Image (cartoon, rainbow, N blue to C red; front, side, top):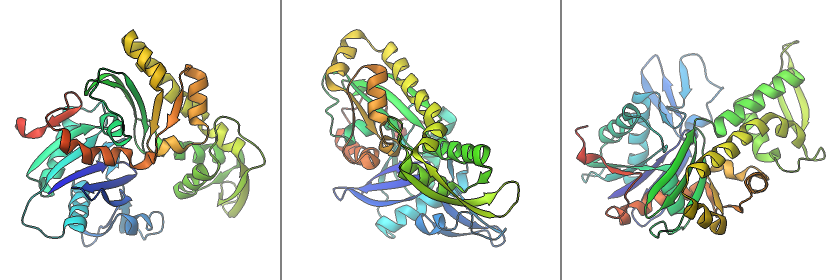
Length: 335
């Protein structure tokens, strides 16, 4: 019973043994404040965001890649493990995925949530390590590989060689902040207030940061900030480009910063191997091209970037003795 959990700010993915990914649902919990009961977890709870009465709240227990609501996170992990395993007597070993730069307090919260959800042993693996493993890269050789993993809450940039991290940087700036930037831009430019889900849909449909066009458009609906009445508006790729380009520049700057900390031999390897983009943010149109032109190193999006981290988390069980840096066996600690 080995379970790998990619506990993301936007989605929770679970891998189990040799079965691969067995669960992929939004990281949302719906909670009734009157009865103090959890009503729904995952997809069912996600549908309730922005559509519930006052006493029912649909919350995301993770913020910026770490647990912000401990009780809800515990309930969510426990419900998801029960979904994939049923009620079993054998307590599973769990590998949990965490951002590359995480404090002791934040990692302790992750471990306690997994312990209380019913695991017998907890391991932590850093997102860039899991992302490269899931992308099918052999990180055991003395050869530099660079990954930019853009998730929902954090973006992690790291260079790996010989099963360990050589240089790394974590930004609390990723998919959710991009959605917020779109909401803010449309509110300030067109005086139209749109919801988080609408902004996310606009990002999927129109995000193009390399050569945006005015011809590709979509309709968004929301509330006019001056009149207070429902209204719809046609926006184009240019609008989304203007809303998110500053955040994309932060990703490029983080990659440059990590390369500056990397030994020159490994930089030569990265020039040959290229930079790999993983996570949901890798699907932003033209992100690989803008990074290639800004850094001068070939850049490519991994196959199935959304599930790279989850796959790598599951693969970590086969490499428990080999992984050096970015992987911890929590049974060594007094948590």
